Length: 262
Length: 360
Image (cartoon, rainbow over all chains, first blue to last red; front, side, top):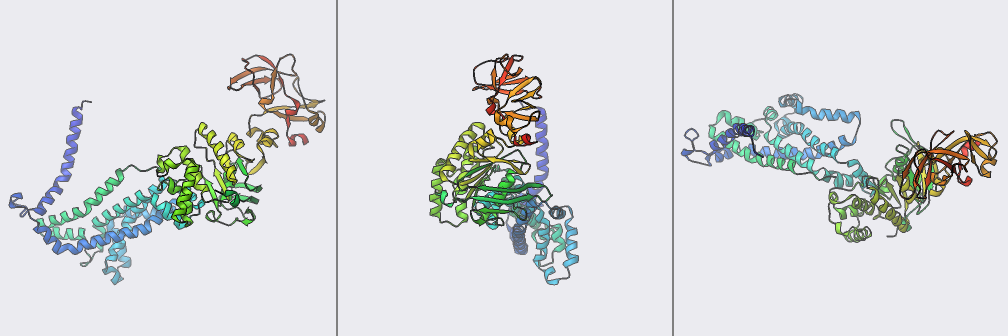
């Protein structure tokens, strides 16, 4: 079929939008790898800034990874059973719980953080530790895990599968781990990736909850933007992209894969 | 397989089920299913047949006062996983995360059987159900008939005390259905397993069951062999639910039933059991209604419609004095067209009089 003018106009427009979004990222990457951004590439390429960032902020990177991983773990242990309960139960309580779980998506992160600080801020040990940030991240990311698993549970006839397993003598836990969990795998994996990505990149809430000793990568990034030279903060962005991009690509890949029918 | 030894009788005593919204799904029910017997629960949607099956399975629990026994064992309060039942679901409920062999082996796996025992028994099942080529296949790569066989193999591998089948053939096409029901029936008989089979398809019920229990509005309308139910229905519901039934409403006059100017001769047992002038409803199956020459008959009418069905022609005859046309089966290759005047004859012995209508 011959493609008309309209097609090429559309294509040009799309490419323009893509360029608008990608060029700053590309410029930032270049900035992080050039000797002097104002002189340009001709000033030479270097890993100096990346090394400097690593030296100054590696603790924020490790902390970000730690919080993201523990958040994911907590979400797995709480979110999957929670989704299972919501899918099974048709009571008013479960409908109310479902609403409550969705709230953190709608409420600004700052407000959640403020709530946490005003209620638990007095417990100094807790306030000073990274687990304070962890709680915020769990509140913020749990709905994504629950919704993701719930969507899969609602698409498979899991009640009948469970009844089938029970008729063969499987106990509740055998049914849960042999039948329910494996058949929700796509939802769980997509929930994991979402949690990791959201937790690693979370700024609003974390900025309010952090202390000088519990800085995460995005907070450190804001810090470096404010106080360091452009090349350093760009190198920092580069490291962040290196962490987050594989997760995003994996999430995209997972969503594209055709689902196996029940 | 040696199911005959593990199989037990099922007894339901005053089993009743009320749903949480207050609906009475099953009125107090007494039922005994012999060891090795195949009982079919038949009825329209919402009659309580699936509820009864789920109560026997342990997927639902009956109201206070009811009792369910497997042999001598009281299983009323026992959950399904401890009841030692095998169950085949309408949607098969095969696990998509496991292949054919893993699905079949699952019952043994949760019982902690060794890998070798599992493998041996799975192979036995694969062979019994002609599934060897599909052993490693994913469930979504199987046809409906293959899935059905996997579900059955999975249910009987653990040698359950009773086998429960919830409309297992309803998702299949007509031809496959016919073949599979013969296969399943032969297999269940060979294994000698006590089975309860739920269906809404009367032909399937007659082909499968040693006995059929027809349920209506949460109670058994009639229970008996296919012949008993077909030839001597206990009530109007059963008569109309199983096969086609013609109704003749009239008054008893002498040795015949009269309606309009027509007379339908009755058998001595029929007319002797009722008094003269009494209003009666007699019934007859289409295959018992014979078409004959108009002038010789005591019941006469005109053909309103005729359908060629291959082995017979179903002729609908409008009769004066009857509200519904009479369905008659003609097994000779004779053509009838609308408006043809015909006579009807029903051998008196083939007329059915419902017990209730005789005593009104």
